[in-house]
Length: 296
Image (cartoon, rainbow, N blue to C red; front, side, top):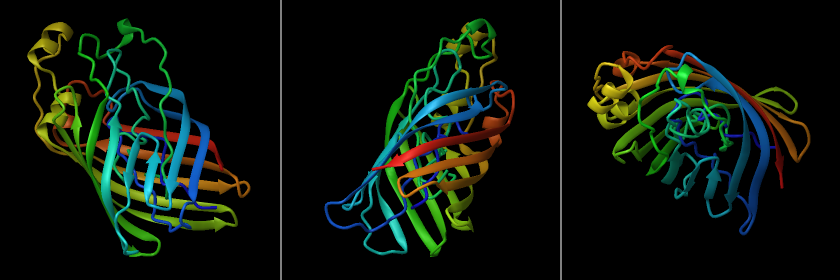
């Protein structure tokens, strides 16, 4: 059974990245579909000191024409060359609610890119989803008083290049996050895929960086004048640049031709102006996930 492209973690970053399935030619008219459920433990939002455990539905769909839906992202493979993968990409940035909670896949599938977020980069394929959140106690919320960051549809592209059959460079570029729709985020990384530990057990390793423009950093790590008055924080206007660096590992266990257990872990370290934001309680974020998916 084929392994999964990473997550259901918009993985650890709050703006998780959209990840693209590996190209896999299929007979014309055929489909490749996975559905399941998983659990993810991650920071409440990127930079939070609090961790949360949540259930997540898992979803992935791909056609022989190269069209795919993977968690909170969708796109199309346009390349006919096996060494290259590229095409248009749409992804939902989950935003952050007024309770300081990432509304989406915990960095596994939101702005982690066609890599990682990815959401944010654990396997050869990504599985992620959205589940309702419980009510948040604002009295214990370190972001009380800050405005909600609404979910946004982002548009962009992905570009991957295979250095060898099992090693590829991966990247995504997405625009449209934040309440002003002007956040730009780029993910770049490298993956070592399909390491066979034993029959039916495969490991994927990945590493990369996330870059954002100033508008994106100000949306998620900045404090404008209105937020400063409502929250008590001093105003803070971060610039663009490298937002974080991350390392990921994913393990897929094919229980049968139809069932797969996908698990993984991801360490993300905030960098630059994002790290120095007064909203950040913990610069290092660790996310773990596991889920059971059925192929049909």
